[in-house]
Structure formats: structure tokens, C-alpha cells
Image (cartoon, rainbow, N blue to C red; front, side, top):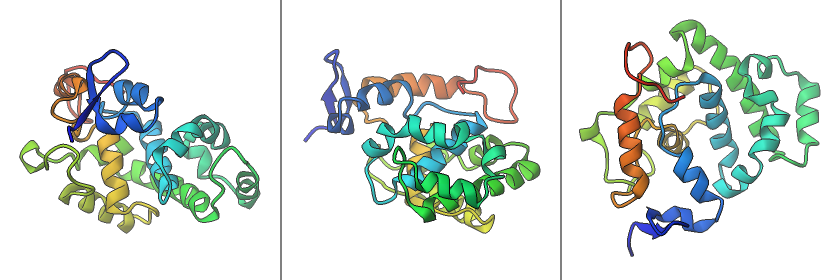
Length: 210
């Protein structure tokens, strides 16, 4: 079995795109491209937590509903949610109605504010765990790594929830902390180029894709 499948244009894409037609656009425009925007980083980590035990297709289909329900994942606002908001979310059929995950998202928003106070931004903290290229496994052969284990431990120490090393690894793949596109995937080279020019938080010069 090859690591790629033909996309709508006939060019090879990562094999997981074949699981759903909507995956191709997500793969080509989002997955693996580096992100430095704190709200997008917080959103993705929350959605990875909601995905636990489910498929990404389910979460992607509900993503706009999640954004509406959680006020665009503005973590400052989510951090102020009360029990009334928990009840509201538990009654929202457009999202995953799991009390533990909903309460974890609110808790994590509070922890995010603390982390920003300490590190200046979520991006500065997360990108501090970007692994060196030589430490990476072959594309799409791992479900966690030393870097995801370290980030998971650091987040749990800060009080974050639903941030196990596998969840964190999927977050790192999606947010571009690693380039895990298959070797034959047409998007791999584009991601590599964007990552090369990407401004890591705290660095000057270059071009940032946020």
C-alpha cells in the first residue's frame, strides 16, 4: 500500500485524505502549515480533546458549530464561562455534548491565560517544543513522540486536561510543529517551504503564516 492517494487534481496526497472528500481541502490548506495565532492554537488543542474516542471527520463537520458555541475559542471569554454556559453547551446538538470535555475546555482556557502571563503567548510556549528534524520519525509512522510526551507533561503540570501525548502529537502535526506529510505528498514540499520561512515566536525576520 502506498502512502498517498490521488487528489481531485490527480496529484498525490496523504492517504488519510481518502477517508472523506472534505479532507482534501483541510489537508491542502491547513494541516501541517505552521500556526502562530494563539486563538487558533487554543482552538485546535480543544478540538483534539473533543476528538478523543471519535473521528476527526466528526469534529471537522462540527467545527463551525464549535466555533459559534465557544465564541470563536476566545480563551479569555471561555475562561469566564460559568455553570450556565456548561448547561448551554450540553444542550447544543451541534457540538459533542460531553460534560468532561466541555469542562476541560473551560479549565484549559483558564490555564491558557496563566500560560500567556508566564510566557507571553501560547505560541511562544508551544513552539518551544518544536522537535529538531533529526528527532522525527518517518512521516505518519508514529502516534506520539518524545516532544509530544514532553509537551503533554508540561501542560498537565500547568493543570491542562485532555492533553495526553497522542492528542498533543496530533495537535503538533496539524499546527505545523512538524511536517508529517507523506514523502510523496504534493503538499509536503509546500509545507516545508512555509516552515522554512516561518517566524518562530520570539524571532525576527522571515514570513509568518498564522
